[in-house]
Amino acid sequence: MIKNKTTFNGLLFFALFLTVIATQKYAYANDTQYPLFKVSKDGVSFWLVGSMHTGNKEIINDEKLNSIIDAGIGVCLEYNPNDREGNSKVGKVVYYNPPNITLEKRLDSDLYKAVSKIFLQLFSSNSDFEDMSPYSVANLLENINLYNKVGLDSFTSSQSIDHYIVNRAKTSNIKILGLEKTEQLSERFLAITEDEWNIYVKGYLEMFFCELCSKNYFGHIRSELPSIISSPSGECHAARFS
Image 1 (cartoon, rainbow, N blue to C red):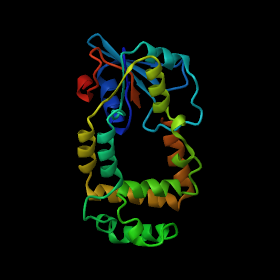
Image 2: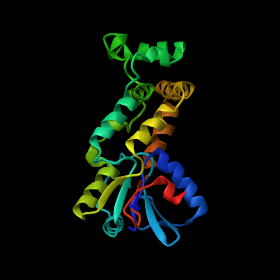
Image 3: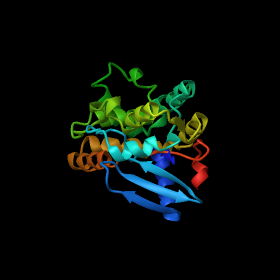
Image 4: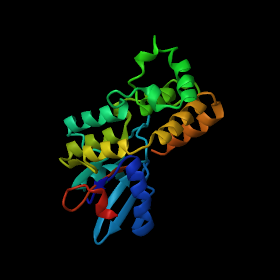
C-alpha cells in the first residue's frame, strides 16, 4: 500500500481491497504497466498496487508507480519486513507443523498416501517431509508440477513487485510498514481448519495430474499480480479504511 502518501499486499489485502472499492470512491490508473487503484475516504487517499502474487519476470522502471511512491509518506506491505524476529515466527507457523503433530495426522488418509507416493520420489523416507505443513506441501506440489510453466521457483526476489516498491521507498526515504502485526498473521493462519487445509492440498494434487487445470490456474494467478502506498499518520492498519 502506498499512503498519500498510500499501498497494500497479499490475500488479506485482496479481501480488504474488494470491501474498500465497494464502499469508497476509487479510480483506476491506466497509464502504467501495473494494476493501480486510487481509493479516497474523508480526504485521505491511498493506492493499491498489484495483486495477490508478486512474481513478475518483467519488472520495469515505471514512471507512474515511481511518482506515487515518491509522493507518499508510507508503504504498507502484508507484514513489516523490518520485524525479522516476528517474521521468523510466522515462517515456522506457515511452513512447519505444530509440535508433536505430523503431516500424516493433518491430511486425510487417502490424500496423505497420494502425496507420499509423489514425495517419495524426492525424499528418501516419509520422515523427511513429516514436519512440512499442508501449506508447504501445496507449495512443493506447485513447484514440481510439470504443467506449471511459470512456477514460483523460476522467479527471484529481484523479480518481485514488493522488492521493487521497497527499494524505491528506501531510495526516497519513505517509511516501510506492515498492515498487520506478525502475531495477527500467525493467528489468522492457525485459524484455518484441517478440513480447509485438506481441500487446499487436494486442489494442488489434482492440478499435478491435470495439464488443463494447471494452465488455467497458474496462468490466471500469474496475471493477477496487492501492496499499499500510504496514510496521513504514516501508520498502516487494515481497519482504518474498513
